[in-house]
Image (cartoon, rainbow, N blue to C red):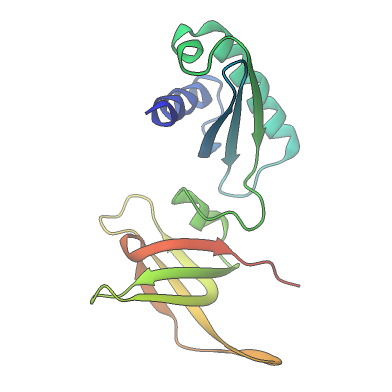
Length: 171
């Protein structure tokens, strides 16, 4: 409940601050009874810079200070951190698929029989905004021990079937 209300407030604050291209990935509230720690993860469709994170942080601090609603959620004493999602963090917002087009993903998904599968592949396309059934197209890579992976035919996966997606680090 707190997380959802805070997320809604942050999304509105991003628009009010003129940061429409920045989208909220996640908000985490931790801490003690004395001080709350609010961690805000943001991104853009093309990646986010440290400078943009800093501007968003300043904007949110200003808006938080003026809002009694936010103070009722996090208290008067809080720490606010704004950053981009780290490596290995699961995809939480559908717009992140756009951002990671061309990258390698590790997915857990269910098929039409509701059987869980895992796949690693290159994200070729992400049709996730303004469509009735958002989907991605993944070029699976069949992993072989000690050898380079073999590419197979691209697969279309609806987002409703994807249970977890993580961007893989490539070397």
